[in-house]
Length: 161
Image (cartoon, one colour):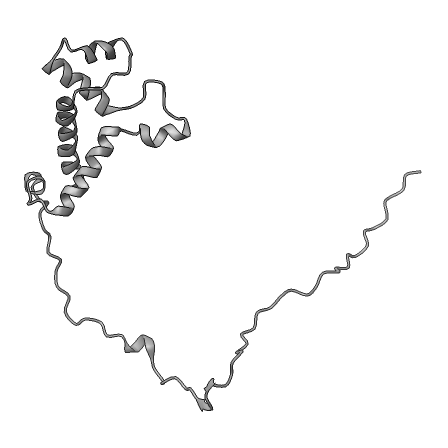
């Protein structure tokens, strides 16, 4: 014989009653300091704000000319910033990425690459250039380094503007 399952029993909840929020003033009385009761002055804060009666139209200024920005007078702080930005451009991202091991064996060194280009233009048969072509560690002459560094400082001046 086929039997039906028993009807489900009503579910009795064992949960706590739902939470309700109630604002409770923890400090119903004004505070006292040294026996003197401190009471704030009555105010109507939102109504106390005054809106301007007349609004001025916005003045739209044209974009400055790029030449005016680049050739603006240079101060001491501009020179310091140009030196730092130019040196950072010269070194490239290698000095930041190398400690994390994110640099290839050749690296990303724009100053080193430009030294080779300037060296090729100035003294194409120099020994240090031949050494670099053979992948040897060779320092560029001071005159080439100064020329490259000054180019990067000039780029740093434009970049910091």
